[in-house]
Image 1 (spheres, rainbow, N blue to C red):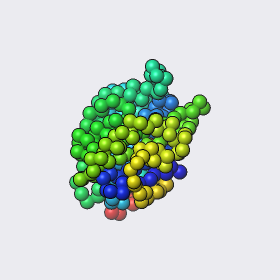
Image 2: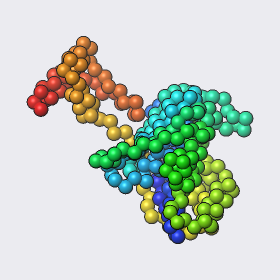
Image 3: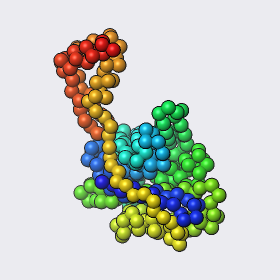
Image 4: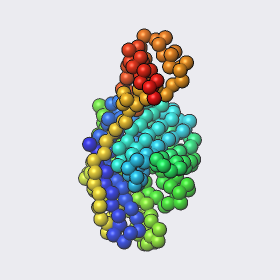
Length: 291
């Protein structure tokens, strides 16, 4: 499983979340059969959603991160829970533009220009929706820009996915650092300096893993790790939820289901297919009539 680490600078200037998301991104690649560049784009988005979701404190909360750009990959949608478990999809998983001039995957070409949306849903409260422009399509820069402009929280974000020669995910990681109210200016300056000096996330992941990434970004800054947890690519679809969806249909729409020999409902996040026969429909119809 993937690993999520949460920490705080000892003086309370910044909170830090880091993720070794290799297993999450590899699972997404297997489920959606993504091209290398689509794997990188979806993988970065999944790790961002995981870290952002873990910022929520209510266990009933959920976070949705959506990139609606005009790139070759189409829309990217990821949802996460308060623990950091996440699921996602990309509209055109086979999209795979040529490498950039520097030989790297062209994630920006996959994402394109458009808007990025963040939706936080807390049962019993009003959903929060924030929207910002996609500034680069590289995901990490877009996340940092969103927090700075939409939530007025100075944020550093770095994400990386390395695809191996066999198209599997060799490593994937990310870090999110947010300045807190009354942060020390010296800490902020040191964080900016460290970020400029750091190698790519994937290079550092290969050198020493996610804890090494944290140590490099927080070099010469005292910090304490207060939580380490395992997170996963986790879909919450189920046959029961599908049955409830069918039961919610109006009488006419429900009866129209019988025109097919069987009904199949497909989950776009995990590709699970739920099949319902006429006998199943009879049972669902009988149960909903009792209510």
